[in-house]
Image 1 (cartoon, rainbow, N blue to C red):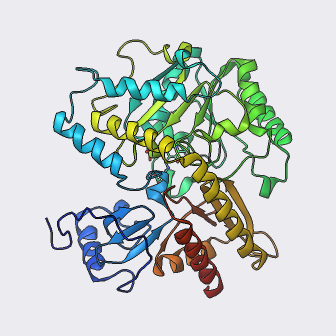
Image 2 (cartoon, protein in one colour):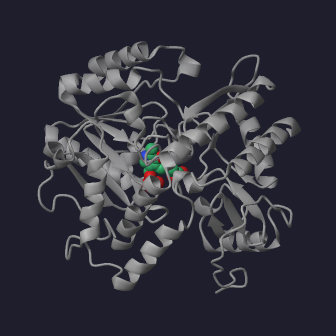
Length: 451
Ligand code: PLZ
């Protein structure tokens, strides 16, 4: 236990924004200096300049006693709230029974129960025809979805989209669009990974059908339909800027996949697990994906990911063909079962829709008074504003950085994103109160006025 880490206080955190030092305070500054000395440059620039002591509900308490409103959820992970009591209890209970056996060595029931629960929620396929397998990180799930799709089709080409983010391991990184900071200096990347144009209605002005037609022509002329093993799409592109495709885009892509025997993979790592108001964001599109990747919100902060999908495709990887030491760790499975239970019991899908309505109304009101907000977009508790030069619509990354920085300095944690770095995204835990949400939007308005 260090000087900045008092013994765990388990009383619920007061749901308030309260600054008792400037941001960052002295304890955070001391930890930042230690971080710079202990870890390499790649780890030196966390989004928040403060270090966490506790988090819960809709707030993060830092090591100087500042209480910040959390509109980030650790990048869409603590969807049911950080240290949700039922999740914490399930993990504590499980680690007293056993911490690990390796599911490939000595299996256990919670893994099976989790696979059953996800099968029951899979859109468009009866539960008995769905299978699920578990891994550790989002990137690992993406890698395995590609392996499964290649095995199932006997084909090689993997098609991702402009603005895509799929992770930082090599295959996932090859599929990720943005050069800096993700890909620069790390080439070469795996072969047979291609990219097609996405739907970005604010910038391309295309209908969903027209954007899909553009993608189809690109794929058919430059890759060849018969070569495509997998098409991997985020139903709402996350790191790329919360790009919400024009209506009909996703449906046309999925139909193309099914006409040509390609596996359609919905990467729901950021958009899934009740975040958008549906359990999976793809449900909104009325299509049936072949595979879905999950991670982040599934286990309330414990590292767990998975690939869920149609049995006939999932079974293409033979016994022992995919796996890993920690995949489906028992504490993570216990946490995930508690998360799914909390989503049902606490009505969190509905809550995500309510948060979406509050955020949209608040952000649209800011937009009405400020032409630098080019677009308010998203679904449910996955909303963003795109900041631009009002005259030219050119992306204004400096403004996004300044507004987010001002908000953090005043006790509201947000994240930026976007291929052009000019988007501020809002991913509150679904347990946040309306009062905190409204207060946070107010701080954002002050930040816009101040910079
Ligand atoms: N697919 C859609 O959003 C992770 C990445 C943050 P991992 N997004 C946050 C960063 O800078 O690395 C993500 C995602 C989508 C895959 C991933 C990868 O998930 O758990 O980070 O590997």
